[in-house]
Amino acid sequence: DQQVKQNSPSLRVQEGRISILNCDYTNSMFDYFLWYKKYPAEGPTFLISISSIKDKNEDGRFTVFLNKSAKHLSLHIVPSQPGDSAVYFCAASAGNQFYFGTGTSLTVIP
Amino acid sequence: DTGVSQDPRHKITKRGQNVTFRCDPISEHNRLYWYRQTLGQGPEFLTYFQNEAQLEKSRLLSDRFSAERPKGSFSTLEIQRTEQGDSAMYLCASSANRDRGVGETQYFGPGTRLLVL
Image 1 (cartoon, rainbow over the protein chains, first blue to last red):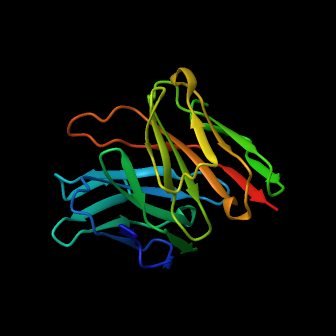
Image 2 (spheres, helix red, strand yellow):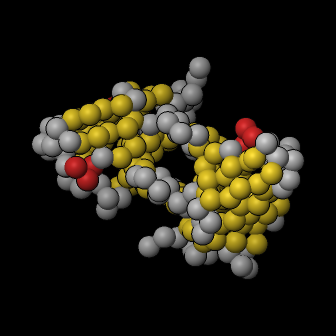
């Protein structure tokens, strides 16, 4: 069963605009959430994370929002840049296991 | 570069052959994970080591798969009698102990892409 879901397989955004990537989870025991970025032929690269005790974490152009009641998190990228074009995975953990979504392919159009 | 490294980056083998992959984690990281990723999917957990001890194994890890981490440093993942369904990207990740109040962040290697013909 897919405990972490990314329902949008792709997203196209104009350069300079905001990109919003969404992720839903089912397991209320998850207490740590991460976003990874992946380019073709490379492993995922850590981007930003958030603990369940917070509802927002910001790092430069990247902000992650967590809504525990809705079991939903989102990644905002603003302003979007062409170099942000990649596949983005959200992940959630409880204990030692990490569960990944299926990814959203972001294309930022110059 | 002190990131996670994996070798080889690509492997093509015939069905029935054995293959072995190596992962060298970030040197100060005591936790090491193996994942498998197929097209259109996110990484799927296979197994996890803390130092040299293999603490968890996924049901995805059939008896044809074995992983080791002697001396708690590098790790190897062996697949015996490979099948076409084993074709995937095999990713290794490492992390440090989870601090109270701070989550554990895994850092991934570039992966080994396996193709079983």
